[in-house]
Amino acid sequence: MNKLLLIASVYGFFAVALGAFGAHALKDVLGDRVGIYETANRYHFYHTFTIFASAFLYNIFQRKIFVTSGYLFAAGIFIFSGSLYALSISGIRILGAITPIGGVLFLAGWATLGYSVLKKE
Image (tube, rainbow, N blue to C red):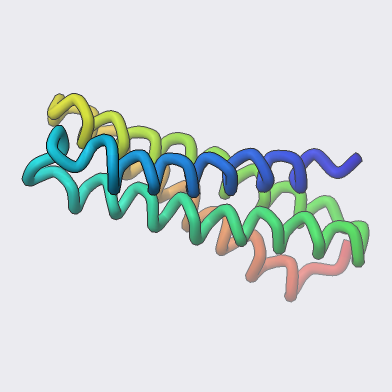
């Protein structure tokens, strides 16, 4: 079983669920922090697709570098989107200090995908 496909499926499920939850159940709670929540959900969704892409690339080419990129994207979602979801719901601003770590993980995932074009394993 390809663990990345499972991770992408779970993350995709939660991207939809959290998006709907934010749009409906949290509308009044979020107030002026709705934009933060929407950013978390947007990046969550975009990078869920990159996990799927990494998994499919691994299945086709059998190169571990694609697994590495997929895990970097997964960690990025967890930290970047997770910290923004928590910040938007709780209002605890210090949580925003964690967000750039997730952004760096996203960048590392993209850089790893780019590097895979140049590197032959």
